[in-house]
Length: 445
Image 1 (cartoon, one colour):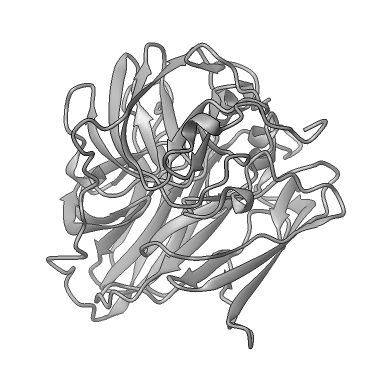
Image 2: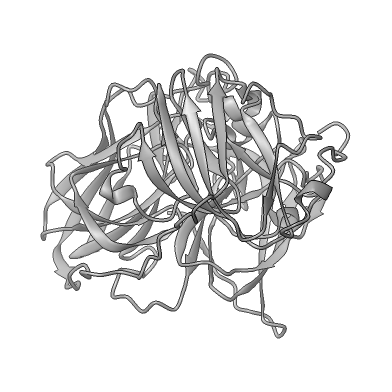
């Protein structure tokens, strides 16, 4: 279980978090030491927690032998604080971004984002969850490590000596591993002590899609997507997550029972294989828990106005969007602050997905069909199946900076690193034509 980092505000009202990126060795397989990277430890990182309205200050120290970055995936924040490839952290230096959290309660996460080496840095272990709270007083499980658990899912391949095997930048998708880790642990089990448990599920893999269900086919409730709670719980038997996507679920347990969370083969190129992920063991005596609320939060639909801007993005092979590879000196799109736009993502090849920094969006349709009910909330990452078009209603924020871009990209990290990424800036409405579409970059990064 990742430790919880939830510092008290200082006298100035700021919550200060300290993260150290470091190398080490971790026993993942019995009797083997795996070279790994982590935050504040040898593998993965602590769960950060803050609330809406909090002022937060990060101090991210790079104790690695390579330049890296830390991106706050799912955060609505100024581009200079976003932690994309334009905010490199040199070895031996500290990066100190700060912002005020102003978005609904959600499960977000943090991970490196250096262009060309993101896949390697994440695969080695640099990732952690970032939980956001707000003032909606819902009767949901919220006691971290008791009835509210993070589940960071990642797949790995191992060499005979226990080291990670394979090259995350080779092949169509990089690495699709044959060992699934949950919170950095292989073949884990968890004892639950309450009648209902909330799991915050993060697909932290480089490429694998998870099709999650319980071995006994029990039904459970999805209560949240990437960007926060749904308006009402959705009862399901299974749901899917591609890399970077999150969901929150509530599962009911009976005293003394055991059940296994699994991922099942759905026939998709990045979703093949059946794997047991986590054995759940219910205690003989379970603390009572309230029913799942019938209603969660009012969810205002992201509605594009008549005549809204429509932008189209064609995902080509594994290394280009609209026929162009990522260029850190090129601004691809200019968006007015506060805009709601329609983005159409076209994929004519194998599986991709699509993440947009800073925004919240809702999926309008995938391949001409409405999304599943469990995926109708606010999102920032979406699966784009082979031979399909995904239409999104995208809500942009109000942080303007014509010289500091946000990213949009495939979150299959082998594709992202190979060039399937573009850049947009948010500017004051009416100034779009004044933006210089060429920007300086950090030499060598």
